Length: 95
Image (cartoon, rainbow, N blue to C red; front, side, top):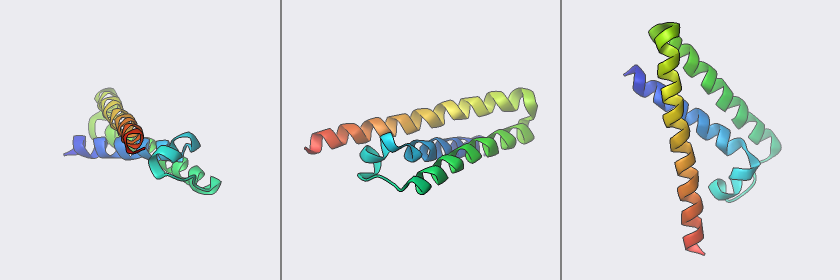
């Protein structure tokens, strides 16, 4: 169960980081967020990464916990990038 929680935290963290970047707000949100909202999303993303690191280390220890967390980060970042790619592709087909 902890593995799913770590994967969820990683995916949400990378999604928040991605939504916080002005470059990706157009394809994802179809508008630009205010600067303060973008900053809050980036802070939330980095806080989620720190939280996930702490959860993994508490659950599995430093040795195995960091490996599990890096695996969850890899899958979470891949999910965020694929989501962005499919949104851009879908937007191209609509036009």
